[in-house]
Image (cartoon, rainbow, N blue to C red; front, side, top):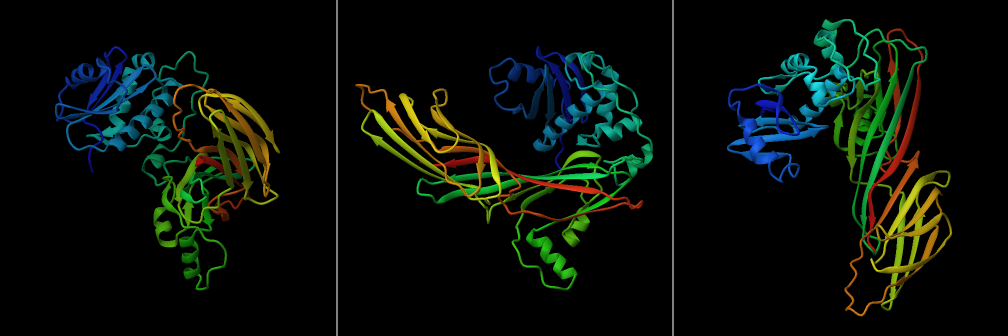
Amino acid sequence: MPVAASAIYFLNLRGDVLINRLYRDDVGGNMVDAFRMHIMQTKELGTCPVRQIGGCSFFYMRISNVYIVIVVSSNANVACAFKFVVEAVTLFKSYFGGAFDEDAIRNNFVLIYELLDEIMDFGYPQNLSPEILKLYITQEGVRSPFSSKPADKPVPNATLQVTGAVGWRREGLTYKKNEVFLDIVESVNLLMSSKGSVLRCDVTGKILMKCFLSGMPDLKLGLNDKIGLEKESQLKSRPAKSGKTIELDDVTFHQCVNLTRFNSEKTVSFVPPDGEFELMKYRITEGVNLPFRVLPTIKELGRARMEVNVKVKSVFGAKMFALGVVIKIPVPKHTAKTSFQVTSGRAKYNAAIDCLVWKIRKFPGQTEPTMSAEIELISTMAEKKSWTRPPIQMEFQVPMFTASGLRVRFLKVWEKSGYNTVEWVRYITKAGSYEIRC
């Protein structure tokens, strides 16, 4: 595995070293001078976060008024290095009271050195969880006077948390009402041609959870994905139930998910962290249910007039509705005057983005509102250049609808005390890059 860092430097905006730590001896202590001379003192600062100078690679990121610079001399895992920086900043903020800047670093030299020794070993990232590190690094940071965040309560059972299998959840949690909230949030990406054929279409989704459960519960989530249903039918020695199944691609899980059980049983089993977290992410490229279809017609009537007709059809069920629907229809830059007729919502011309903006606050399913617009253009004596039509863009949110068709079949909670739980499941589909060529 490639290393993530040979050395790490914390610099202010002038390039002065606030604090640094060398993890390997393959880079010199004066490497920060090369960064200061070849990157900070040139116009290239901020253009690319990865640079190579003299056989060494520099990865840098600006947080507030501090530059965090990682130096390596061999093949390095760049993604791991930047992930380490982000997690380290989150850790420092938890100690400093929500602030990470030059003053916070100067006020917490000793604590930062102690944390840097714990979170990386010989260039390889280690445990960066604030909840676990606070169990045995109990020194409190000098908190910012502007921070109103209260200090975290100490957590017992440090040995169990550090060495046990469940490092993301502490013991002894109790709630009067045990509840689980699960949200499936999807973004639809679409590129459609002017003739109505789909050129590119996919769905990126994530499952967000918020758990308020006592003790150490074990949760089991069942989805209508194809592999999971087929595995369940094999284990139960009976044919799979009929119905739509989903093929999930590029699935990534939170660290709490039992991957061994997922590989063998194809079920998502986990001991959840307390509070809010992202359980999994996925992508779907086949069988996408498009929530809207847009049928545009744009006619150029001579050099000074245009006629725009747009029909938007909602494909989802009649009992559902979309919120915050915005359709942006591009027009030429030399637009002088516009007039509209809409069957639903409001439309106006936005000169700042050269678009007709049609907004519908609440869009019922199985409806086809239309917009007609007449556009007057500024006539010029110069030769008219052909107008390259940008695509129509849409923004929307459709509650209780998933473009992929993904559904929760069951969500089971088991805990040794046997308490009752309340499960809440919600679906929402949003527009990602939803474009229609015209």
